[in-house]
Image 1 (cartoon, rainbow, N blue to C red):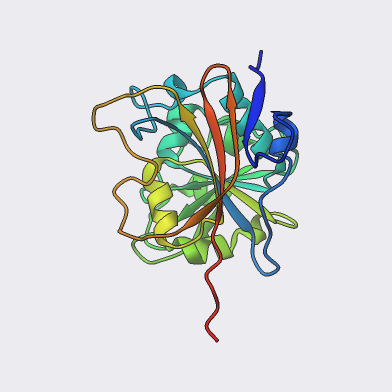
Image 2 (cartoon, rainbow, N blue to C red):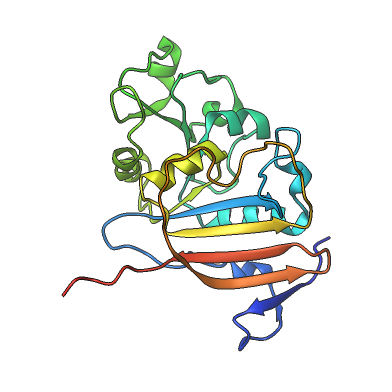
Amino acid sequence: MHAPLRRLFPTTSPSSVDLAEAYAAPLGAHADRPWVGLCMVASIDGSTVVDGVSAGLSSDNDSAVLVQLRSIADVIVVGAGTVRGEGYGTPKRPGQRIGVVTRSGSIDPDSALFRSGAGFLITAASTELDARIERDVDVIRSGNHDVDLRRAFAQLPDMGADVRFVQVEGGASLNAAIAAADLFDELNLTTSPATVGGDGPRLFHRGTDRSQRYELAQMLADDESFVFSRWKRREEPTSP
């Protein structure tokens, strides 16, 4: 059962809020490319995992946010390690595609995700793939030795009709690479009321230094002290 949610920002809105209404749509859209959002949970001290997975930081409301954002996403992009660790299967939304980013090409074509036809690969041109994968799985190749994510994301509309919203779901190293490619339009972050310590990955793990400003669009909290924030990329002023 979900804990009740109250709105902290914007304060002019009613204090109580329905989760589905709060995440009913992306924070914006582009005319010439998909809008790209990130959905992640992190501890107060910034870790995105406990014992290697995010489940220890999550809650019913956090899971509901993820499910709601998935329901409006046309394509989900996720790292191969996260797919294995979190047990990704067939998406619930008909026609939704899940792009798995991998540099090694090591995926299981017999998994439910790829047997369903919903899963596809995003990899580099030089990555050697098993013959079965080449035959049975759709592949976006971009970049020679490393995946060129900017070029790969430009090809995402080829994976489905009317791709308007792309949701990224980690892991943290993939997040960092996408941030370095300057592709995120919004961040949907759950802050778990816990500290983890250790050397677990941050939201953008081991990425290149790149500063980007975001504006707070929404902040909710529940009785379990989880905080749910939505951040929209700040538009840079145009030169005269």
